[in-house]
Length: 315
Length: 320
Image 1 (cartoon, rainbow over the protein chains, first blue to last red):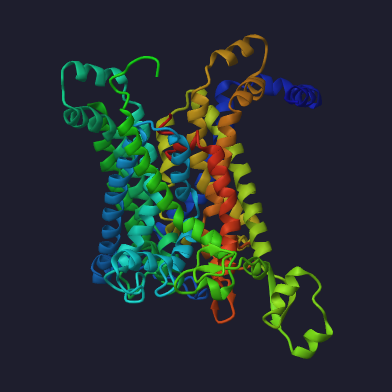
Image 2 (cartoon, one colour; image 1 turned 30 degrees about the vertical axis):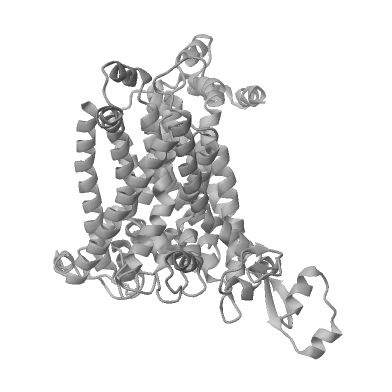
């Protein structure tokens, strides 16, 4: 098939053009191949970013078209960094980040370690375990909301069944002390397989002869685990944490569908708060400054982390 | 297991590990199975307490399966007077289901349209990202490009921005260009989001193809284009296919941009499904039916992709 197509293309190409194409240097081809991608990224990512930076110094409101925005310098940034409510959102985000990563690493690593025991049918079960992470986070949030319904929800029923509590005596999404954990549970359900898969790749990358050598040296299984398994898997684990960290820092869809930031604002992560400022209160300039602060934070933390990761890899 | 290895776990260890993993897999499946079942319940059964989980049984925990959820998902209905219902006998099985609530089907719901939007935008952006991504990945893999590492990192860093941060100027820009709530606008946007994945992933696949084949082709008188088209592309086919599936899944699942930048014309399924309302509140069986239909293709693709899953989710950083 492809042979015919290429021949037809070759025949259909006028001779001068063909000569030109044939004559193209590798360097020219490289630029022709790369530039559309770079152009698209400039248009969809970089230009908007620069525009956001520019807007962040104004008091522009996107719902008031006929009012000229004024330049107000760093006032947006000052207001955000001194706003105690935003620090509460940051705390909610930190709580979410810390506990999701904690549980996902703990459960994910354990699962990978168990799967690596190569029991019969481990491939099939791995595929089943992996399913949740490929689903749409918004839709996942939506149906977990159904499972979390007080009285009728399956989650409350199962908790009630095993602990003897009345299933209508608690509301996972409606109580200030439970809602932050409700979102941690769903995120852990969804993303533990991600950490598991990466850990599994790490475990499988350890060559057998290292363990054999340790066995010859009569190192105990426990000692092998801490001196071989953990250090060899660590770079993989850190990579998984990096991906989860970035993703959960920008978490929006799952939580917005589950709790919408409520009750009150205990699960209002920074992204949800940002959406409120930008698309409900229409404080475009203020929200732009907020977006820049978040981006710089992620970028800064990620860069420091990648440096640490590279150090671990070099060891 | 012909040769003895000190690392081969004992039978008991395997049995123990297997039991724990299978136990986890079964627990993790409960929410998905529950949603699939709920799609086949009547609204009353869906919110019954204690939950009903035995299909087709008359016991207290049993329910009769019905296609009501699916009918409600795809149709709009109105309540009618008894005289009207008596005068017009039900036209088909779907109509018959609706009649028990004194209603008649008056037309299709918006779900079909939204689902179609998801398909159009998903496939459109996937095609564009894979097309552009393959070209860029080939160039990064085979040619010396000045500042290649910086460019590649720049491509990846665009993924770190919170979607809402990008959405503010995109919203303003699209409003000016008339791209708000259009398929083209969403396709371009999703391509911009997915291209970093496509480039990184395809580069990892193309890096794995030995350069000797192309060099041989070039000596045989092929041009660079021909070598790329005839030699490299066929060998990268698996990689391109799995990259395409990843891009498709991400575009399919996307919610933040869709909810902020589309309202009607180009709205995809994820922002639409949670808003399905029935009589007296959310219509959970219809929502569950919509969720099932929406998630099923992704699950099938995930199973097809299982060998390349790890590479895809880590942007090509980890290869098995």
